Structures are given as C-alpha cells and as structure tokens.
Image 1 (cartoon, rainbow, N blue to C red):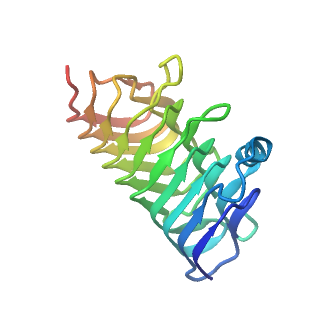
Image 2 (cartoon, rainbow, N blue to C red):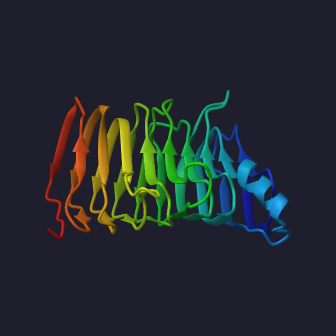
Length: 241
C-alpha cells in the first residue's frame, strides 16, 4: 500500500493496516478537527477515536504523520496475522488521551525517530503505554514529550523499550508524584535524555529484568527508584544538585 497526502478528520478510526507481508508506506497524513469540533462530537472522538492502527505489517514505513484529539494516536496490536515492525519517522500525536500504545510488536522492532507526543486530557493522560503482552522491541530516538500529563511512559511486558536522546518536558500529574518513566517489567534503556522538571524521573519495578540508565541530565537532583530484582546499571547521569 501507498497512502500519502491525506488530510481529514476520521472520527472512529483513521488508517487500519493488517496482513501486509511486504513493505507498505504511509506519508504526509494529517488528521485534525477541521470538519467539526462541536463539543459532543469531539468529546466522542476523544473517547473512542484511534488515528493509526497497525496489526501485522512487515517493514512498514511511516513518514511525517500527525493526529490531534484521539483516545489513541498510534496503536500497535496483535492480530491473527501477527504484529508490526517498521520505521516511523516524524510522527506526531497532540492532545490524545494516550499518544502511542503498543499491545505487542515484532522482536525486530518499532523504530520511532523524531516523534512529538503530547497528552493532557483523559482519565490518565499518558504519552506512551506498552502493555503486558508485549514481547517485542520499541525504540524512541530524538523524540520530544510535553503537555501536563500524568506520566511520559508506563512500560510492561517482556520486551525491550529504549529512549535515546529524548526530551521529557512535563509529567507528574496534579499531585506531582508520578514518575516520568514507570518501568514495570521487561528491559529498559534510557540514555542521553533530558528531564526538564525537578520531579521523580524513573521507577524500575520488581519485574524489570535488565536496565541501563546512563548519560542523562536532570533538572534538580536525580530521583530514580530501583526495586528491580534483575541486573541494572545506573551511572554517569548529571543533576543540578
């Protein structure tokens, strides 16, 4: 498939991709409430809408896409056909309850570069959720996360999730007691990132098997809570005090 240069306002689901066994491409797609932002309609879209959904699609290429005002911006699911792997560059999700959800993905991974993610509405505004069923690999490189959300990411599953050279601007919720990155289980890599609030940065849960947290910079002091029973390396991070 080749989908490009599409602008619109899908209400329930924008693009759904599944059972693709060779390279598909999605380029320059922009979903925004141009058709209507009437309160009841837009509220329904925010509560139910999914802009981009990917099931089994091999070597998927997604370039310069954007969505505004959905329950989920980008969603990666397990179907009967399988799961997704691919290259996602310059993708954006603004004012989504959850900007990106990974239910499961391929071991050779989701390669997400130059992404921009914003969440600040909904029952628990969170930029990234990786679910307990995930066994694959997810990488975020040179991505930015902002908006007064509760947390940047909640990561579960047995897979690997990495954040490299990313900027985390806001998190914590109203009580300012949430961690930016809540790593419940699996393997985590957090390297060369900037945490711009003087709040708790990272929690490693008991189920974390491996983690490397190095070369990051923090506003204020380093606040990393490690309850992992696995192998963890934390070092060469720099705070302001």
